[in-house]
Amino acid sequence: MNYVISDIHNDLRRFKDMLKKIDLKADDHIYVIGDIFDRCNYDPDPVGVYFTILELGDRCSLIQGNHDVWVAEYILKYLNTSKWQRRKLEPYYYNSFELIMDRLTPVDAKELAEFILSKPMQQEITVNDTSYLLAHAMTSLPDREETRAYYLMGASRMDDLFYSKGWEGYVSICGHTNTGFFSRYGGTYSDDSFQSIWRNDEKNVIMIDCGCGYADGYLGCLCLETGEEFYCSN
Image 1 (cartoon, helix red, strand yellow):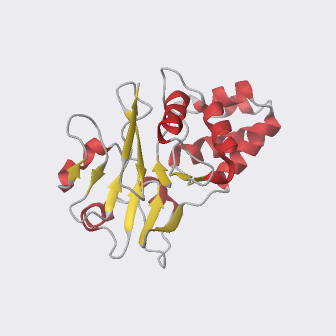
Image 2 (cartoon, rainbow, N blue to C red):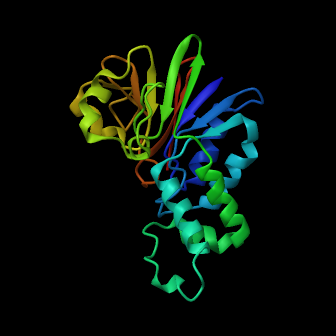
């Protein structure tokens, strides 16, 4: 089975609960489409999330998210700055940097940063004759390369077209923006009683950031073969 998950945001407990819930087998695969770091002020563990992804090995594919890139680039900037000049750096806005540096050696922190920045911004896969495009904020057609910011943050000039119509011949799966914001584009939620996975009316755009990283949010996961959805709450 192939699973897609996004926006873990330092929540190791929900991430591990989800892995148990889907019962990931040796021949299963999970695609994590960005934002494994930052937020989760109630019990953040970015190093635990990172190590868990490493432990999954070939069963896991990671796609860059904006928060992942931000902390990775800050780590490299910090480590490449002399000690006496580091005090001049603007502090990292979120909690991941200090938590990572408290637990990892500089060598291991650099390896984490390079690991993040080596990952793709979009991935195309085919499951049961359906072609999927996976990216953090917004996908592009495979033959059209967009800017880095487009994949990590989205592009307001494209919002109406992408979220409403998607791309012909593909199903796009993204995270980045909490699904509660997508009612303006019509579509449907899997469950109206909480912040669940959203699909547009064309059924070719699926948004799966269900608010993990906030105490009242959910971590959502989608099985591509069966369409089954899984959720973990606080």
